[in-house]
View 1: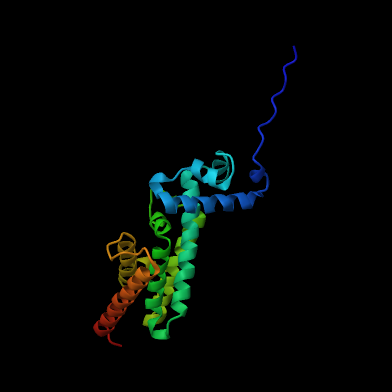
View 2: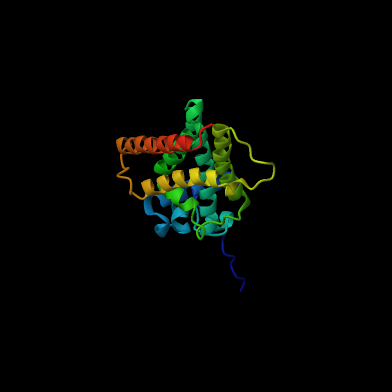
Amino acid sequence: MEQRRKKPARRSAREKTYHHGDLAAALVEAAEAVLTERGVEGFTLRECARRAGVSHAAPAHHFGDARGLLTEVAALGFERLTASEREARDEEPAGKRLIGTGLGYVRFALSHPAQFQLMFQKGLVDHANERLATASRAAFDVFIETYMQANDVAFPEGMFKDTDPSVMREWALVHGFATLAVQGQMGPAASPSEIQNLMNFARAVFDGAQSHGSSQNPR
């Protein structure tokens, strides 16, 4: 008796409408939503697929595993962080541009708390990933460039600027404030007015640090 061939499983109508790049973007968008609502602890590829309206195997096809998808979300976060730093920096007068960069850093963290925390989690994302490494490097380079302009200094060609104590001091201050704010240690940040209060506090802290640094190192 001739065996009847099984018909291939039908894909959902929505999945058929995706082009390769569009599906990847939809999965990243779904991943961001899951991360925001459930945190890393509640993150699953299956839930991302459900929200994107595709089969549960689709995320693995594009990103390999949950770490691969989270790495893409982290890279996107660093790109947004870079844009936020530059925008806030350019809103400030020449003497306050380093403060502006820090405010852009904090503003991003408060606007995307789950993504911000993910970006610095070594076990959850692949920091050796080229796209992620490039994006994170760009975000830190904004800090370095603005610091050099603010202090009228230039690092020698080829110098590993990340280890310069003065640059690391500035980054530690800003990153520490952002991390504490996201964790709720600086006060509530659930409403626009609460976030603005934190931004005002951040400006006062960064302005005070800059003034203290200037008094310790007069030109």
